[in-house]
Image 1 (tube, rainbow, N blue to C red):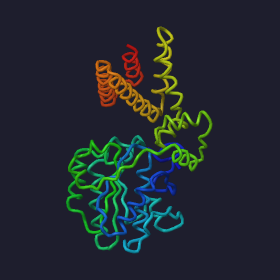
Image 2 (image 1 turned 180 degrees about the horizontal axis):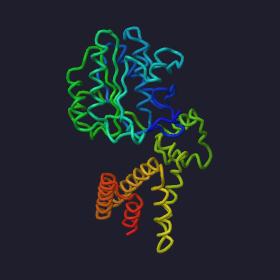
Image 3 (image 1 turned 135 degrees about the vertical axis):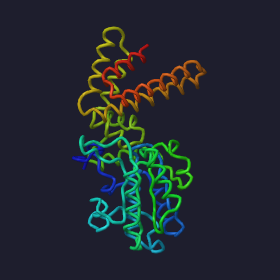
Image 4 (image 1 turned 135 degrees about the horizontal axis):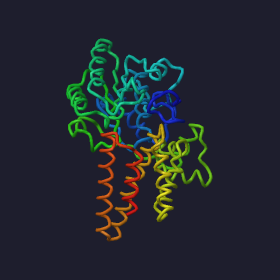
Length: 341
């Protein structure tokens, strides 16, 4: 579970331990059959929105490969990992000698995840391959996600992808593949995952012990847009309350609006509010994009341009605020004020 794991949401299961995957049967079948054919690509770019199961699919496939080292004898469909098997236990504990998980490292001083995957992390891949070069086993690197690679780390990964070791496999995850180096994308086989439909998302939430039913549940499923992580933020982090508070800000005027703005800013700048703040920033960006698209469709090109410009300016303001560690509450109040105008 999430307790004690930086970056893992409350109520979530680490992808390396998760035995449940919903809504991606076609992708599972493709990976299994591609591997069984013996002609599978050495690097697969698993792309799609955050929180839909990309990492769970990657570890599920890695378990399949390591449990079936001979492709020709492997099943033609991925099975749910057996938690009691040695391969599963080693993957879940991070002790597998044949699998390396590259992700943002934890800052030892703060106990929080660093902002990027650095070149030092990628050097672990070089060491990993050199130490396992004579074993004859498959060696799998999961990059989770590649969006977090800084420039030097991305170039270092590219060099390995250009001349991959024998029986090496890269599972490259990306929420926004358009931001990756084109040269990295060109060396990977793309596998696009779609957001979960309502039924699959409800099943995924039930597997986590959360019964999303009734009117409130339907609202969560709709707002989550097919993402388990978004649903967890709505349920376990007060995301639904944040959306309601934002709607109140936009609906009020005068002193009532200012009071609502301060209430929302206090909630988003409280201690340990990074997760819900990130949720709000994402929600706000999506909301502005949707409004701009609706304006354009209706023929209001001036309005669409204005909304697009506001979205860009807010993004720049948030980037600057984060880079210079500016007061979060004041930044939020400024943004809300601009939106009200």
